[in-house]
Image (cartoon, rainbow, N blue to C red; front, top):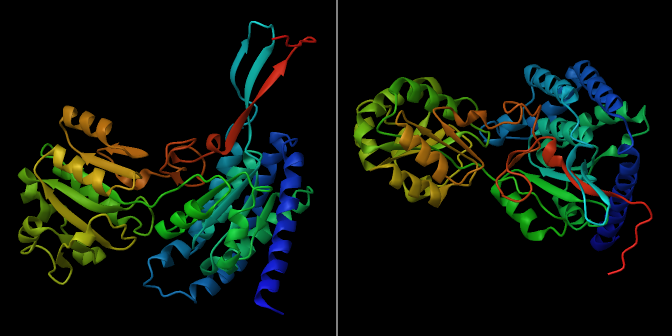
Length: 427
């Protein structure tokens, strides 16, 4: 059989599944929240009994990836991470429903009564790479918000995603809702089918590398909510507290290097150059952190940091999302130069300032264009769970509809309900 015929058969099969997903949305929107919450808790309970099976399948994926690959940590599941996922599922179940909220109401001059209420988006497509925890997170949020979901994971996490969706569907089948989640084949060649499925999918949310996000944005006919890469900066001001700064910088960089809120570039005020040895103290021995420093920062660190891990920064080391135990350092003259650098290189994800001068803090918080801006706190907190959203479907770096960690509210749209008494319009 010709390759084009095989593709057409696969496309037809996928569209058949997408049609089933679209059809289940009518049933989903009629489900009462107590049942939705009960199903989410049941999925958490069943997952708790299936750790061994899930971890075995996850290990099959891990065995195919180089442990040195920055994506390895994102791909890896552990008992502890599964427990966190179960906790998040239960947390989502405990959140108030985002549906049926009256956003606006009025009676207009004609006497018609208008109510604007929150409703599900319908079918949400999520395209993502190497993060099987996303399968749980986005399902839980979409389901709680009354949406069906189409998942398109990568080959890297194929076995993990298959077992996770199997566990979820085992529970959903008991309630006749198994089509509320569909895992598309991991083969990237079928991605255009998903991106062009305007009859079946209402919105697509990409999560992954800058390349994946750009491909989705440039090729999708279905509307896209863009979740961007995290090129993250922290500015250490002349008024910074050294104790706070040392702890914040170490946490932002080393807590978990493969996540999008990890620190990539430290900008330090020239007046505080002498603090650099203290800020980086132990990060070479304990974490093996590679540092790309500009000339002034390099000269200061050269006598205090492992020279095997200290390198002179090149232009490509700024504006880079490292996703590994690497970071860059640049010396700036003042706040304005720090803002200029951030404006040039930021992906508008998360940016931070360490300072005690309130005027400087206010200037930074107002001027920086990013979805989340911090003062005297680690950027590691850019996370749906940490923001009290239960979980997140992604960090939106755009400005239309959603921005920052996307939780339940961002997975809803609205409609107008209009009530009359035999009203007709004459003009």
